[in-house]
Structure formats: C-alpha cells, structure tokens
Image 1 (cartoon, rainbow, N blue to C red):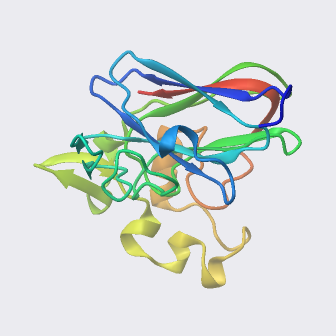
Image 2: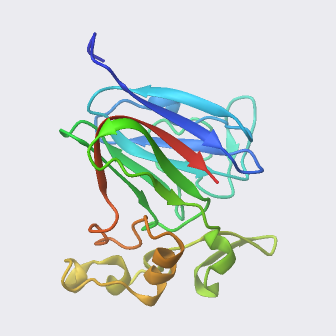
Length: 223
C-alpha cells in the first residue's frame, strides 16, 4: 500500500445466531486480505484495511469445523477445507458481496448469481456518489424451490441458482443466451429478486443491482 494513501476499511459484523466464517477472494493480482478467511462469532465485529485499487468478493461460510492446523470443512461456502481460503473461492451456492475499489469510483453489489446461503448486507459509511446500502436480509432458504434446495439432515442450508441446479444455457446466460437481449429473468431468478430486490439474481441483472460510491468505508453484515 502506498504511504499516505488512505485505504478502504471493511468491517465484518455477525448478527447470525451462529458463528460465521467469512471468506475473502481477491481479484486477479490483488492482495489476499486476512489470509482469505477467519472466524466471526455472534455479535463480533472485525475490521480489515484494503489497499487502494483492491477488488474481490466476500461471503459467509457456516456450519464449519476446523482443527488446530486450520483444516476442516463447512456446510456451505467451503473453500477447499481450509480456514484461510488463501485466494480460493467459496463453493456455491453462496451469497456474495463483490467490490472493485477506486476505478475511479468504488463499484459494489450483492450477487445471488451463484445461489444463496446466508443473509448478507453492505452498509455504507461516508463517501460521495450514489452510495446506497444494499441488503439481502430475508432467509431465502425458507422459500427455496425444492429443485434448488441444498439439504443437510433434512434442513435446507442453501439455495442453488437455476444455473447451478440445471446447467442449461437459458439459466446460465451462455451460448445463444450470452447477451442481455436473449438472457432474461426466469421464474427461478425472480424468486431471488423478489426476496432480495437489491441483489443480482442472474448474470445480466446490472441495471438494478450495481452501485457506485467514492471514499466510503463498508460494513459487511451477515444476517
């Protein structure tokens, strides 16, 4: 990080009843923050400084168990069985908070394109521009269609995207559907959009989902 240049502060907050293990995947060539993952107990706040120009994504892992060496597994969002994801992404379905900082503004969004596992919100502190807070606080697992459900001991722990569940061009916006004019919302993506209007529900959901801000700090809240 350049001396004298102010960084962006990301604060992670756990409002869930259970422990959450945030995962962090940087963009290509960007710094791995906090080793890519850490433990966040109920009611706990953890702040991390991100260098100028950082980009990447955050998600919440739950149902995790790790040994003293940091090896184990998570029910959702697992990154190769490691506490410190070290640059690896989370296994979908996961609710994502995505950021590109200082380009020249900050661009950020909540994405359910890879499905949903835990409620996630991006709350803004300071900054200039649109700087809108984004929230996805509804528990989508309760209304997840049966064909999209990920279950553990008869309980729905995550909700797949239609792309992940069916792997067809229509749902994945690939092939003949690889542009905004042919890839439209589906019955499945509209369930996600209705539950979390602020979030991306499919690949070309840009108009209602991406926001810009400049010079803000961000609170990533789970539940």
